[in-house]
Length: 339
Ligand SMILES: Cc1cc2nc3c(=O)[nH]c(=O)nc-3n(C[C@H](O)[C@H](O)[C@H](O)COP(=O)(O)OP(=O)(O)OC[C@H]3O[C@@H](n4cnc5c(N)ncnc54)[C@H](O)[C@@H]3O)c2cc1C
Picture 1 (cartoon, helix red, strand yellow):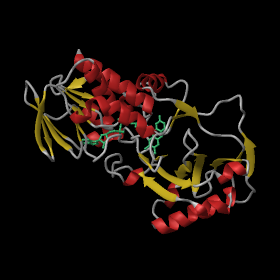
Picture 2 (cartoon, protein in one colour):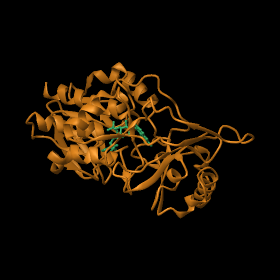
Picture 3 (cartoon, protein in one colour):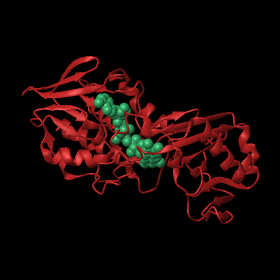
Picture 4 (tube, rainbow, N blue to C red):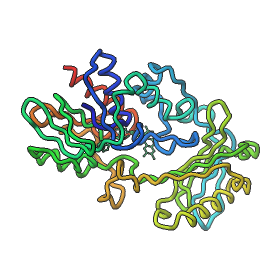
């Protein structure tokens, strides 16, 4: 049994399936797969970029036959570093290639990954209790009970503290779970689509960086085929508690200042505040706490009579928190279960 249909849980399922194992299920609390990978209107509201050193992402994309392309960065970028000084313009060094994006969008990767075993993914199923019954584990969910010889718990450790374990887990792992910040769970993203990439025509890259405005980072988010023109970025968390109408108008006003009035001609406007999403964020998180211990050794061990193992991006000693860490943990967990 795999709990969580994010990139990590789906990677484990993919490897079980590939090894010829058919006796497994993936239980997912949301009504969709992907977890922190979420694409709406061709905009990646969750994970987006990876680099050349993210070997697990590169090899997974290769295996799935999905291409990659560089983040668009041609033209002038804007740096807003003070409310008192004018903005600064800079151009990226063409010899330093920008980060990669996934061909089409990030959801393409999880959708393609899950395709061979899609019937084994049960969405809308929240795991609430896991009890050791000696020869098996009993899993209580909102949709009834399940049993399993082994469980891969592919959910963020902090979220996993909500599950009741019988007998209780050792204090050492509970402490680590509680203090492991779920990477990016506090982020707010904004995405806008357009009929034309007006910024490109004005020799602007679409990149706007700065800590003093409504948007802390913004990038061109046009797809690789150049059909869907878009801008996507991160909203200043200081705007979390203002009304949605006020936040939107402050974001648009800010962006029109640096990219031009054409920003108001957007086709669609969307936001995603991950801190408001209980499947990713924990209500106890008050501020960002950068965990020094992604991939903590407590996650290496098996629990509940060697039948429960912890997985997911935050358990990976390699690029913990990132997509690469999610894939790494998914592969390792599948190997452990297969023996
Ligand atoms: C805004 C944002 C931007 C990001 N940008 C990047 C980026 O550019 N590059 C990068 O490499 N990474 C990025 N990340 C991180 C990346 O998204 C994660 O590393 C990766 O998606 C984590 O996958 P996962 O499977 O470990 O966890 P998750 O995606 O969190 O999956 C866990 C799944 O478990 C489910 N679940 C939770 N509780 C239960 C329960 N009780 N019962 C059943 N199911 C449950 C959840 O619904 C979820 O689907 C970003 C994340 C966010 C939020």
